[in-house]
Length: 312
Length: 158
Ligand SMILES: [Zn+2]
Image (cartoon, rainbow over all chains, first blue to last red; front, side, top):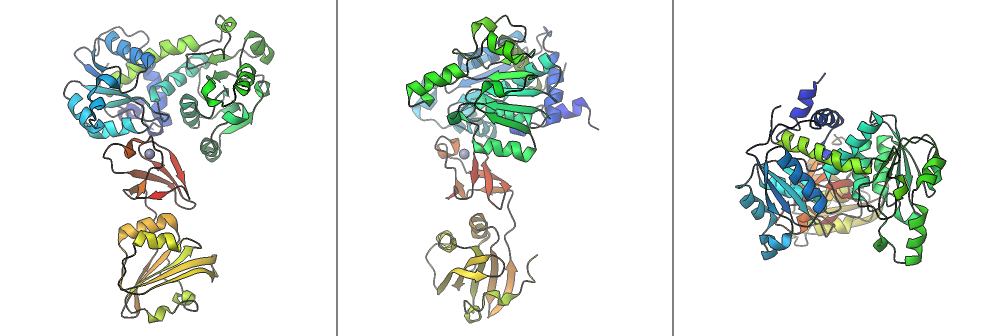
């Protein structure tokens, strides 16, 4: 039997690059620990410096990490856009990291290329956090989604979870679904035919024995569904604008649709939304999409502290 | 493991007994012999005999390659295993099979394959490529960097 502390030992003082590296026990232990950061006000990261390297802009993620670091008494150096960094002058990622590691205690990297965070982690002995590498991974997004689901439903097992919208290109959905295969849930995958889950992920669900259904109809999801996770359907995915208009409206959720489903359901969306969730749901008791942002701050405080080996 | 297989299996098709020094690569998936030759390069001193789509009791059809005066390196064996995981190798010296083996499935494949994802960092920085083997047959590997899955037929050797 491993204790919670043991489970987190493996996590502490290493990198957070991919949810594929994180076990079920580590997820559970991490989420338990993260809860304590909701009310933590002590400056446990005082004197620590985060090197925040955004090789492509992502204002929300950058602000969330900066706020997490500063709320805990730490400080942030870095850049918000590669155009101002030396990569613009052709410096390799490896060299950039070797320079920046002299200025900070932990590195946060956002990069348009898949695998960049892994390479960064291999280039330095400092802990590295992946804040999004192309279409691949964005592990703190997945952790905050799990945190929000557990907080609202009280558990991560025995849930009925529906994913609606773009299941083909959404990194957020892919990573969350893949991580949920560690747990025992029933999934409903609702998307237009052209934006179905890629075969690789379906394969993985089959291999892991996850129960799921695929459908184009929103109302195919169970009436006792616990969580509905919607994603943006981006216009540029559709060569035909008429097709986009049809799809856009077919996957728009409003109060009437949720009431027709009937269940007391948790509504999640990684934001920013276009019109996938009607504003008439914003005061619906189960709407948790704005809570996700607050939970993101909590989760990022916990990740920073854990990887910096801070004891509390 | 498979060292007790009857060595006579390929004899009706190719005169392996005539090979004094060299390597016989047998039980190649039918249609892969030319890829295997590409892996081995084309600068051979001795004769090379290729059998395509031969009848096989084990695999219905198979390819076979016999190369004179040439032994295979572990790196070549690893590459060939990616194309044809059940291939068997016989090293011949003085007309005798001195060694017979099948490739052990690797857990990690380093610097043998190029990642076909153009946006993978391994295609930009000076990075040695690395893949984790999910399953060897049918082949399923995952890029260590971009985490993209690759299946049989999508593999591009370096
Ligand atoms: Zn790759």
